[in-house]
Amino acid sequence: MKVFVTRQIPDAGLDRIRTACDCDVWPEPLPPSRDQLLEKSAGCDGVLTLLSDRIDAEFFDRVGPQLKVVSNFAVGYNNIDVAEAARRGIAVGNTPGVLTDATADIAVGLLLAAARRMREGIDNVTNQQWKTWEPMGFIGQDLVGKTIGIVGMGRIGAAVARRLHFGWGMSVVYTSRSDKPELDSELNARRVAFSQLLSDSDFVSIHTDLNPATEKLFNDSAFAKMKPTSVLINTARGGIVDQDALHQALQSGTIFSAGLDVTEPEPLPVSSPLRSLGNCVILPHIGSGTVASRDAMATIAADNLLAGLAGKPLPHRVDPA
Ligand SMILES: NC(=O)C1=CN([C@@H]2O[C@H](COP(=O)(O)OP(=O)(O)OC[C@H]3O[C@@H](n4cnc5c(N)ncnc54)[C@H](O)[C@@H]3O)[C@@H](O)[C@H]2O)C=CC1
Ligand SMILES: O=C(O)C(=O)CO
Image 1 (cartoon, helix red, strand yellow):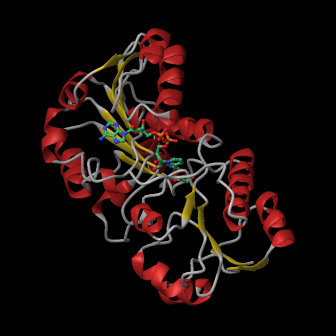
Image 2: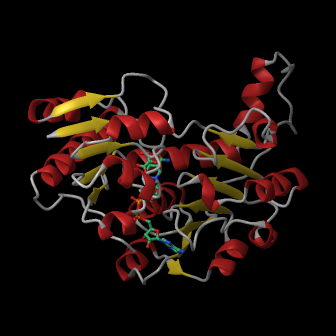
């Protein structure tokens, strides 16, 4: 079986694939260009992709009808046209669960950083502008006893809610496609409408997948409903936030600050005004970036790939919505 792996991934997964397949791994740190992706994947039975690889009808046409499986090295799969894959009988896999804690930790880290103005503080020290301890300097937002609004109460959303409820005594409100009675009783949480979440929350953390209903969900009208002291955290996907509206909200004081692990595009262009705002903390999409998480993602991605090649059910299969 011939496979293309679009980037170096941990040996925990790569060794399994190399043992079982004729495997070509993209060797560069930067992704293959679109043409290189299409060229390298052509004729393959399986591909192991990253969240930055666009997998669509054109890709499937160019790769050929022998393609059996696309295994995404991520839990998010908005880069893949899953419906088109299903129409063609191509299995799609992802890596849920093993990165939940790592990503929730980064969400909490961003929340602390954005609430307590750490970016401004670090910039101040790094630029040698810090002169003395000031009673009124770098005043941020308190966390204890505040309200966290979780947008998308899935695996990562629940893990963030637990951290903030049990660690900082926060009240939890959330939006979800369905009721979560077990979380309501565990966290004393309340499912509310999106607009109520925006107006009630001191902190809002985004944990939905990117889909047609969540694309640019955070726009001018959403920011207008948030408290001027509120902090927005996004570790989900950049496309869920209208970044022009976010810039305006941060600059005008409509909201207090933001912490982003994800942007659209990634990285943001050098000219993006969000890069230079002191009240916007931006990380280079490192939510799942721990040894254990990335090893486990590699193992699952390899297992999905090998199962698909063998015509067996994928351990973690993605179905069309
Ligand atoms: N920053 C990073 O490195 C990482 C980012 N992610 C992102 O986080 C997302 C969530 O991951 P998990 O929690 O594992 O997925 P999940 O599938 O457990 O949770 C997503 C939740 O969002 C809900 N949802 C979808 N649309 C909604 C809507 N319109 N309104 C309310 N709820 C909605 C779903 O029903 C689901 O409960 C991924 O799709 C991915 O994009 C995931 C891992 C790492
Ligand atoms: O898994 C994902 O969806 C990520 O964004 C990176 O781990």
